[in-house]
Length: 166
Image (tube, rainbow, N blue to C red):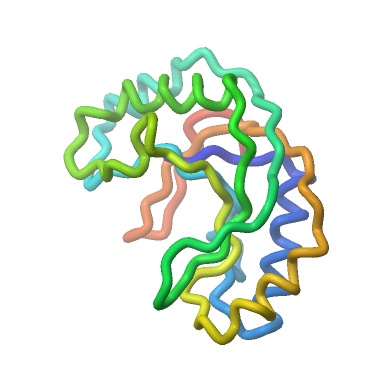
């Protein structure tokens, strides 16, 4: 499950993706990719959970996209941190409660271990990290709004917007 961003912040992240792609980095480039915050992952998410999520009491959540982080070492991932708020943590907990029984949920998406972020580039060669950071580091943290929830099927490369979004 992924949280979707408002149009303005989505455009800002897409601009950062374009700068990174211009450096030859593995940044999303097509319309099947959307800036998002992953809140739950499982090997299988049952249709009943989609129905429950559609009934979730949801209101847009204001957030801030903050500084840059690097995950991993051999083929790092460059991400923009999401400033954690009680509203965001509450939404995450409510989604986790619905999805937690699904098979194959990694521990790093569970409450207490989740680190919300927006991915900017994957598989960055260590020698490219400096250029990648320089390409997007001039951007300061900026406000964003979580406007929806979607389910992304990476195998089929298909999205299903569950709440809000487009």
